[in-house]
Amino acid sequence: MLRLLTSSCARVLGSGVVTWRPSVGLLSPGHARIRQASDVSDAPHHQSPSAESLVQLVGICSMMHLPLRSSPDGLDAAFIGVPLDIGTSNRPGARFGPRRIREESAMLGAVNPSTGALPFQSLRVADLGNVNVNLYNLQDSCRLIREVYQNVLAAGCIPLTLGGDHTITYPILQAVAKKHGPVGLVHVGAHTNTADKTLGEKVHHRTAFRRSVDEGLLDCKRVVQIGIRGSSVTLDPYRYSRSQALEIIRGCQGLNVVGCDLVEVSPPYDLSGNTALLAANLLFEMLCALPKVTTV
Image (cartoon, one colour):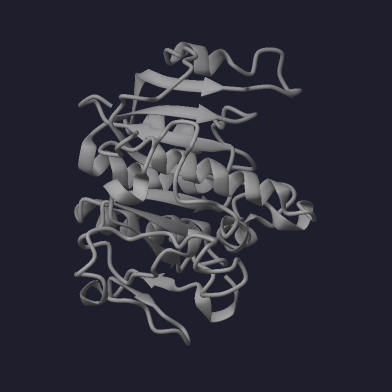
């Protein structure tokens, strides 16, 4: 499932992956030193190494072999992992998604021959590691995610998220709406995620958009859900969604994209890695769709 958020203006393996600790506002590097802002200040943009200079299995396992950074300062966009899956009701394993997506992203190139987009010649991009979520407390994890994204957005950096289950979009939207106000949403997935509550709980993977509407985080006139399908426990599961103004559109070019996420990659059910590879490609396509990306 992937999502792009738009404002109303227009529109690892081992120690290689770092962990964000929002209490100090930095990424914890583990055993590997992270490149600081001063390390890359001489370069106009962060480049993803090509296969001509770096084979796929060499180097730290960051998204597309991008530099690992401890701060969003000075970045135009950044990849962030949210290894959370305690909000799901079935088939957990998405906590391992960010790591697996990063592994498969080594297969990607730095340019988009289909659209002519040159994201790394247009934007300063890096990998900010993973949010240090609390796998024993969903509400606390939502707080941690929200705080991290508020810091990232305050720095003027557009987040591209590697999930994680559907729950994570709710705290991300809280942070995005705090900066931009109610935003539009392009959501591609099988389920609407507009349930009210389950077993008395109002925050989990099936309620992310319901809570977002309740809190005024979304501009419902600019919310699109594409690909909704599957069986249901009621005869009209989309009645709530229809009551909030939905329509399908085909593209996002020209929109002021202010955030993106891709969730529900569960490596235990993706033995070949093809789903994670597709996820990495979709995240790259999201990067290419960001404002200021030049094309040839």
